Length: 229
Image (cartoon, rainbow, N blue to C red; front, side, top):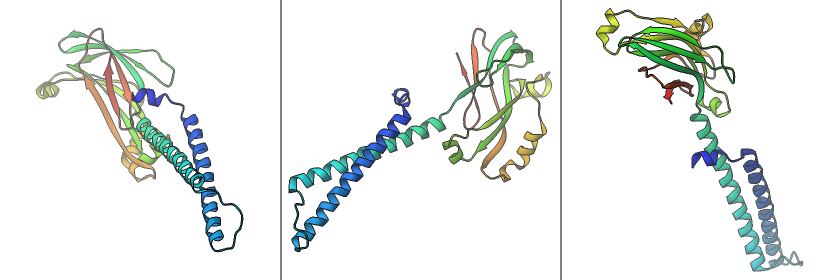
């Protein structure tokens, strides 16, 4: 149901809401003018026709109905915009993986930048799970609402053991996806002191490898998530 509603033309709905609102307000002004003239007529200061009772009632009801429809449309647009902004998910990477043995895996990572698909990179990881790490810069929510999306950068892919004792004594593997530049380190330390920035932090997601499965890394307004196909 939500997808069908989201498929509506926002500009068309906004235009319809504006038209309904303007017509409704004009009709309301006509009604108020008629009532004002009727009052003047009662006190003998106006002698022209001010409209019958039923026509004035229909004028009032028509204006209120149109204003109600206009207000409803704007509330619907606001709700849909809020839903659209805070449920945003954009694919930023694709992972295919296969187990070599119980504690090693082959992982193919394809970064996605907009509509571009750079060459995939293949890594051998030690561990029971693969893990993607990176940075997140989260703006204030009102900026998200205005269309300013969370910034991100995937920097590395690592192997991970399920048992903590394996983490402390078994081999580790980590591979760089993108440069760990000084700008992000600076933002991690001081980003929250800048206006409009809500938080800057590291983020990671991990899961088990599965042959014949495709994993998609998404960026949301709060961080990375994994979905598989």
